[in-house]
Amino acid sequence: MSASAHPDSTDLDRLHSAVKREKADLAPESQPAPLWAMFLLMLVAIIAGGQLGPMTGGWSFDVSNPFALISGGGDPRPGGGGAGDALDPFALAMKKGASGYSVCGGCHQGNGGGLPGQFPPLTKSEYVLGGTERLIRIVQHGLTGPVTVNGQSFNTPGGMQPFGGAMSSQDLANVLTFIRNSWGNEATMITKEMVQKVRDEEKRASQWTIAELLPYAEKNVPGEIPAGPGATAAPAAAAAPAAK
Image (tube, rainbow, N blue to C red; front, side, top):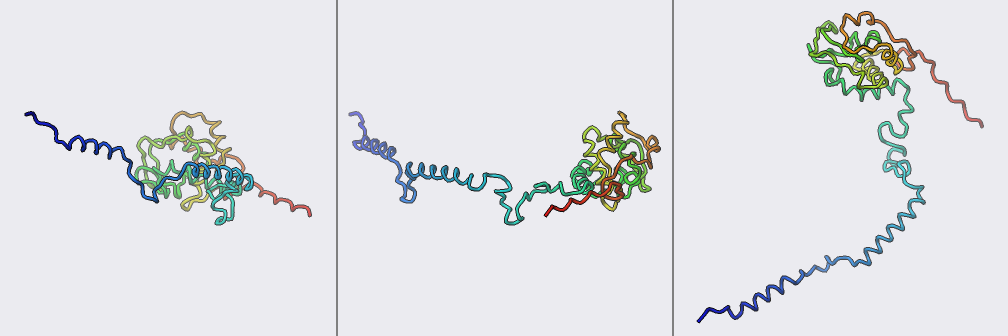
């Protein structure tokens, strides 16, 4: 007599299949929202947004400024809302030069103190506070060989690399103005026109040596100094009072 399947096995298989086809019951609070309700909410949001825009003058940072109640309105970002326009040329050059100095800080350090024997300091340096033409030429074309700064000897491996090809005349002017007036330094600002004048006159392709720069040690690039220490520009005329 051959073995036969258990009399209940067929019923069990059928029962298991039926259970697998059944969906799990959801708790009352987990019932999905009906499609008509979702559609209605979406329609209300579209209509409300379309009405809100014209009523508030449309979106703009000035109108929709989340900081308006805190800052009194306007653009709270650094330099935002035309804040830079209110700065005089010297203050603006210092602000932008502080940012541009990041390319110099790796060698001369954030405090302008340099590194002994390798990178000369910018604080109280005769090369920073001396003739502006020498300083512009150094940054524009680079410097190689030993140099003595503040009575200490430095010989940077490979020398100081030129930055004239990587920075605009305005950027160089801002950085040079910044280092001439930081960490206790105080000197006249260097303008974009001064840097551009040196660029136009000198098409050098190699780094300078200290001996080659001697003729420019105390030579300043001519040009108007609009603001800051030693300013030569006449102060801007005050705006005429409005007619009553």
